[in-house]
Amino acid sequence: MWLMIKSAITLMVSLLMTIFPNSELLKGMDILEFTTEKEGCLLNASIVSDIHIDVDWPIGEWIWANGMNDLNRSVDTIDALIVSGDLTNYGDGPSMESFFNTIGNADPADNLIIAMGNHDVGHVEDTTQEGARQRFVECFNKTNPTFDIEKAYYKADVNGYRFVVLCDDGDDTWDCPDMSPEQLQFLDDSLAEAADRGLPMFVICHVPVEGVNGQDKIWADGGLDDNSDAVQAILEKYENVFFISGHVHTGINGPLVEKAFGFSCVETINGVNYVNLPTYMIINRYGVPWGGMGFQMEVYEDEVLFRARNFGSSKWYPVYDHSVTLV
Image (cartoon, rainbow, N blue to C red):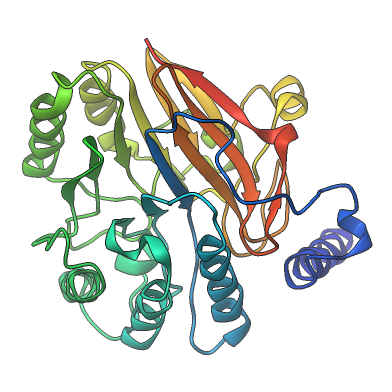
């Protein structure tokens, strides 16, 4: 009973903090001008995850639209919008179309880096998994003809930086993605192709690899499972690789969570930089609990800076910023 009450209270507080951005509960979290942290930014991207649009729950659409309006308020150009999966709750056509239609009104819509999540592939109600993937491809290309993808896993370059998007390409999985040997080879080839540029490379996958960012503590079955070792082996072949995931609904966190629980939402393991994003929809655990949260990722010559921001309420959270020094 107490757990149910606690969850209900957390949900209510999360809603209030998302819907009412000027609440006194957020006093001190100033709505500063939406600009890059410093001069010399080479790639400026907004990264979020787990939007969970459901047309039967309009408040979610409203919160997502508010985030897109926030991007339009940026003083500096936002080069790309990155979404690490679970765009919808059930992968249905109206919800998928709503997700993309809302993006179409945002400034960075010309450079979309978007991955499918288990709720977009494995939880579909009105089509097969392959049908869901084709629906995603069609909506993606209609909204963002810059890349014109053929499959739900693909590669794209923005400002010379390589992005590789991974996806479940099996037909009998639910929450754990099944990656074919062809997709794993595609990942390796795509990174090898861009490695000689000397720039950081970014892999976007909804589900984290096993044991990073607290996955094993937060959700024991919430990792890549049998695919994990193969993916990590490929990532570790290259320098300055960033693996960006979501799925486990962990809030953006900092030193306190790292000290108390032994993990962080940004970690470097065996030379690979792992970034796990909170759910844009409510609620998160082990960190900032409310919705609308994500990172503004700013790439500089010698570092990648992840600046915690609530895109729903247009607020920065500098205490949760993370900086990764490039090698």
